[in-house]
Length: 197
Image (cartoon, rainbow, N blue to C red; front, side, top):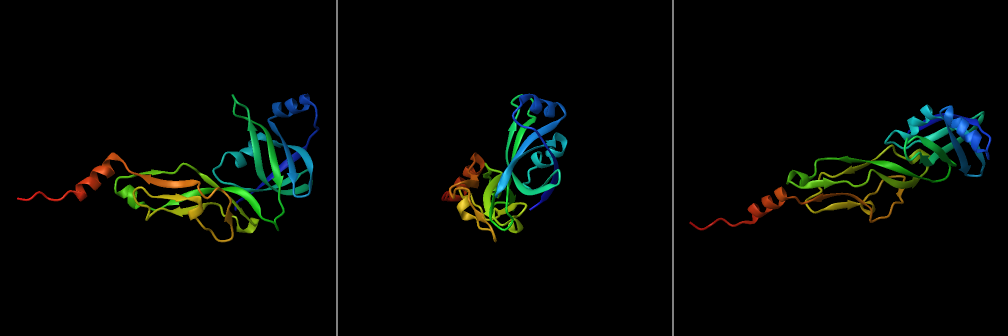
């Protein structure tokens, strides 16, 4: 999985004025916790944070907060409801020797039989939650739909990947090929018997 290095600065907590001052300087208040790490409050430049928040990929984050180094994953981002600027970010510290749970993007590959027959591909989700050691986490989860026919679907429980376990519910719909008027008309023509002469 891709790694991203970010530098943070320790920050004071408890006063709203301090937080507002940070935001005026285009810095985002952050906190890191978990994996035996003492809660640490810091800030990151908003511009630097975009490399983590404005991408379809998930990352293992290497944080350097004034010399204190952490390995973490992005836990949660709170956004301003109007400006959509990040207001606060939670990082979860991880231990690379223990399984990590993280969302990984799906990559649909292949040209589905059902789509070639006139059906429409429905892929309602972009990521699945998986668990595994950091060294085994992939950048993306490939899903080959070449043999997916009309009316067929792939759920999270149908997928298996080496070295990781899918923790999203097994019933989660990954993709399906729905029948359309075109595909229904094609099927009807195929099933019609020729008229006797």
